[in-house]
Image (cartoon, rainbow, N blue to C red; front, side):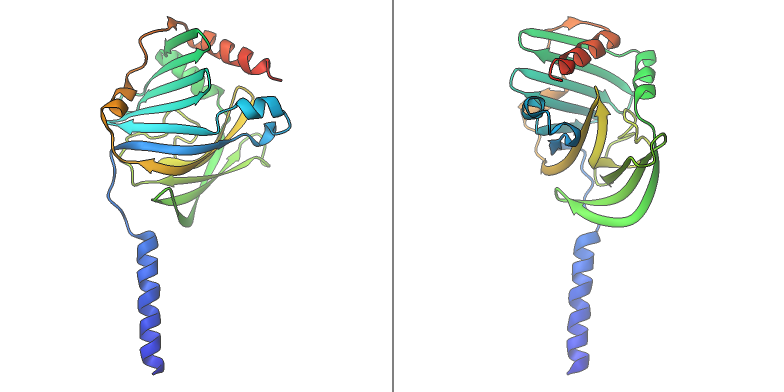
Amino acid sequence: MFVKHSTILIAICTFLLFSCTSKKEVLDEGTIVYSADYPNHKKNVFLYNILPKEVEISFKDGMVRNDISRGNFQNILLFDCNKKQMDIYFQYGEEAFKTKLTPKEIQKMLNEQTQYDVKFTDDVDTLAGFNVKKALATNKKDKKDVITLWYTEEIKLKNPNWYNTFDEVPGVLLAYSVDRFGIRMDYKATKFISKMDESRKRLFTLPAKGTSISYDEYNQKMNSLFATFE
């Protein structure tokens, strides 16, 4: 009887282990919905309440669109992971601007980001339906600043992190933190939309309207905007 029960228990454990760690089909298009939080700005009630609490990142054919929208504010970052090119669209109220970064501007953007040492772990989990792996990123200048990263290799995307400070991570980030315009932003994937209908396929073309500006001008406008809420 003991042997019989032991066999059943082993079978159940094996099934659960396989279910949690089995490799799934690699996806090449879709939209990941992230929750967004701003842990260092919760005391600034006005700013915290107007900051977007949800972010969408869509991908298809090597293109990635990061869409941050709230009310009359929209900031779209469009990345070509194959060619390592980047475009930005920014709208606030009636004003709209766009910029296509030059290779020099892209390098400047990368140099401005906080630099981290990334340590990979053996920890695994699931997030938004994906199998994920854990890594820890330690700020090179502030060892107390440690970010937990969860990433998946179940999305087919070349150079998935070439445009952020975690470029050595080999998969798409599903939980991570970034600092932009003086704000720490925490992102965590909550949902995945696999189907790309015609409306979503058009996501990879930026709106035609908008005044063309340089990357420096874009940074100035964004910094000025957030400074008004401090």
